[in-house]
Image (cartoon, rainbow, N blue to C red; front, side, top):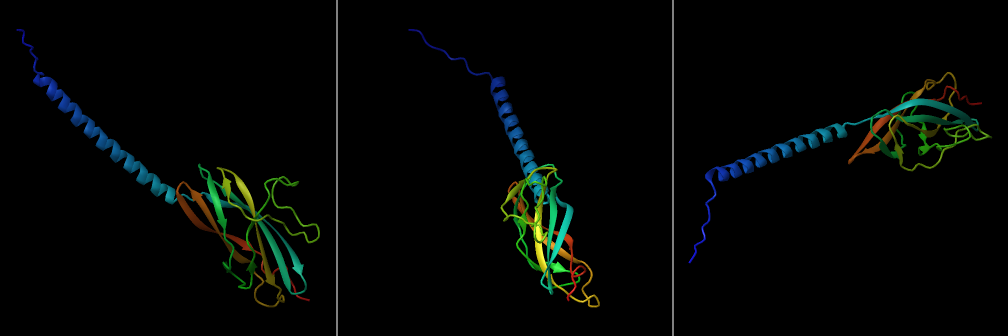
Amino acid sequence: MAMSTTDPQPEESVEDDHQEIRSLRKWSIVSVAVLLVILISGGVLASHYQPIVTSWGFGVGHPEGAHQEEETLEIGLRNTGPVGITVVALNGGDHFDGSSSQLRLSPTKVCPLFTPQKGGCPQNRKTGLLVGKQFHPFSLSTDNTRPVLLQYRYPCVSANSAGTLPATLTLPVTYRFLWFTHTLLLTESASDSATCSPN
């Protein structure tokens, strides 16, 4: 009757297996730690990512009767960063300071992407005021500019009254980058009553 024999596994082979398992655990821990550092650093950088600037501005005014002026101001929102973003809101409001607290801002609009003027808002033939479209969220790729339109009214004052200096208009812009949403305040000079005189 033949007996089967099994050679026992050498001790060196068992020790090699344990060493390999320890090495694998070590590299797994290091890899997870490196990944966490990258994610945390990326999150901190993304949470402070602010690439939007205003690149230019163009305004047109028109009197409304004898006591009020309407102004339209087109400004370019430019993405100076290396990554695209999505502008999700342009919030108008009574964010004014400067020479007048009586400016009334209409909802911010966007200019068409393509017009006969090759970009920018067209002008109303009768009043000369710039005309925009209702705001919808839009993407802004790197080193690209999108014109937006601010429209506001202010009362006329006499040349001897206070309020003849330009005011500052503040526009909150909300944009999304990765999983972060930010709001920044952009400021532009706004015509106040320097071009408006009551009869």
